[in-house]
Length: 615
Image (cartoon, rainbow, N blue to C red; front, top):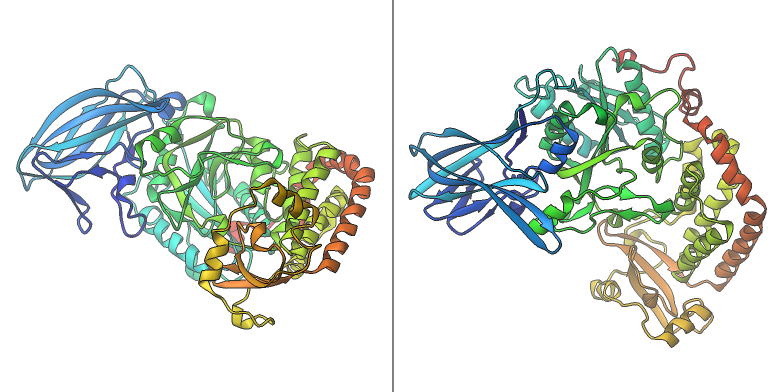
């Protein structure tokens, strides 16, 4: 059974060669023909993010036996099979076998050799070296022997929530159609269906729909509502359509099609004791495609730990480290696959709009999470997408998630968390953000029944009106101009390091209690240092990616109002915190029921809009 294809870089997906192979100057890659030219004594290695084989995961979680490598070559080359693993700061290399492959030049010939290794730690990989004056390599694949009758049936329903992302969505649907849905030669031809919740009601449903692509119009109740609507639709048809797994995936990612193939083959070979495993896809940066943002995560009560963050996946050591299993609690929903049987009328996500729905559902259901090199998506980094309204959801949803899983900090500890976040926004003159943080906490204290009674779409519109709105500088009411040198200086600003500076900043609220010293500055929306705002009257908060910004002003009166509200919230926490935590712990399950979601999404109570009805 073919398990994994050898990939080459492409202009459509990713052009970072070291993520696919490492070559010397006697190797040439032909972008137009997907072929690699190997001259005499040239050497090319495939111990890379996309072309190493994650033998440690395959051996642990699946029924595979002997792994073989098949390569397609012309000419005369030396093939070396290896196993590599990370040990401390070193890379251990186990040379498994070396073979001479000889074919007439101009005649592409297939060769297959087994990996015979005692250890299954790390990855399997290979290298090719040129023997004849000119040779060519044209791809290949890893395959395995499987015990008779051990292949599991797999059919994946892709659950996508979208809101005005037509350009991204249509591109991804075309890719899925071309590679799998309309390609009878694909292994995944009858193993994928797509379910889309259109929260904005802007998609051309007749043009995009097919017998394998199903689109429903949904209330704009955020990612949580959109993904849940998809789960409801899938749950209604999963038996008749033989759906075994659900892939929850963002609408604005770049997909590596091979990730879907590897996900499907891995699930097809899984051992019986791991029938309930999840497969997570890593998030790689869209702007720097070889940098990994996260591969699995630990919630840690809200003090989130993004595992394997910042790895440069062009490097062998990073790829080997990426394969090491660490404690994980969930995988974010840019790409997360789990058994369809987990979804039931009593086990749906929480209606928390955005920020934390994937966390909570993962904490609730994840037992085994498998992550491996080569299963990933590319996504815009979160620091590149500034939204003021998110501050309402940050602490509110953190409290809800923690209450459901008995992870909430003590009342005293949470007051410290709240004070730190509110004061940080005040020191940056972002008083609206500070108020949104406090409003989120106030609404948490209202309890489960309050959340159940909310119209999520109406609430979100209100929250958006209370935050800062990014605009082009020429459209701002204030007369401000963007200057890149000023902005760059703020980006490079360092935090105060001397003790007396930190003490003064703390006592004076970052200079708020001192006279103004500077009239104007330009700072980034994310990662701004308080020193860039210190004793400045007007701040242009600039989002470089969108070329938009918003203006904030030093305002002692607004700061005093925030402090008064914070003190009142402290008193409210003293009275209501423990009761609200207990309320969510005892009654939060009401929000996970289909009966609640039908009302929340305004679906017919007895029969929600099925895929067949939409068609």
